[in-house]
Image 1 (cartoon, helix red, strand yellow):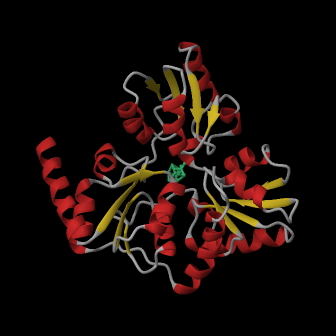
Image 2 (cartoon, rainbow, N blue to C red):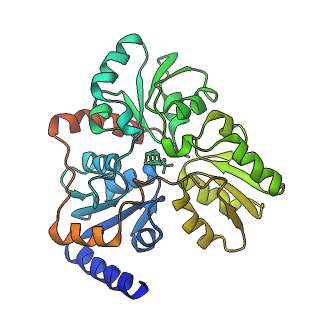
Image 3 (tube, rainbow, N blue to C red):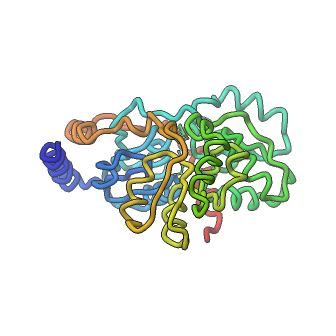
Length: 307
Ligand code: 13P
Ligand code: SF4
């Protein structure tokens, strides 16, 4: 297995060089993909990278909406998603038709759209956000006292209790994060009373309430490196454990539930990366009309000052 993987990695590296391509990996990808990638990150970090890389080709190991965002921000580049069937069920919970109908109910509320959404939905939005900047994005909308937040109701709740505006949620959710229950976290807290609990804001509000820290996937690496705690309970998808353990060998990480696995994030294999690069297949492209509107919402997000 190791020998086979080494050969695949070598072939991928050679092709990446030949094609002036960059390999981006989300923090939930399989260990071997993260190990091989030029850059691993959260949705915000990867969007920024996609907007400034000078590579001709971006191979995006993640899910469909992430490759779409890369293509919107870098339309002159070829963006490859090694597995076209790697989607995000939360992104699919809101369609442009549903959004047009819902928007009519709140005509005064700007639409804030989580990047976990299709390009068509982004194109109908005022501004995008990620889990890393959602609070700042909503605060940046100074001209309105309420916003309509789509599609994640859990992230909407997380933002709503931290800002002075009303945050009206759409009722979408991430099936993976939503499965984590407070009882599961409490069991681990009982078992390891010295442990801290850090979770993603896509978790249910009852779970978020139990957390010592709530952040994006990349925020978790920072927190794990900085906390004095030696034991950390993790409330997000299991792919994050690979680098957390590698970067913090003296600390222990626990996943409170066996169901914290996103099947879509796990689809992409080294074989898929190699064959998509060899054949330059699975290219994600967004039509000019959709791209231009979606880009405005993404660029507006990128112009919100970061820490
Ligand atoms: P991050 O932006 O924190 O990486 O999250 C993306 C995602 O899909 C979480 O489920
Ligand atoms: Fe979508 Fe959840 Fe998977 Fe993230 S973890 S890609 S939000 S289904």
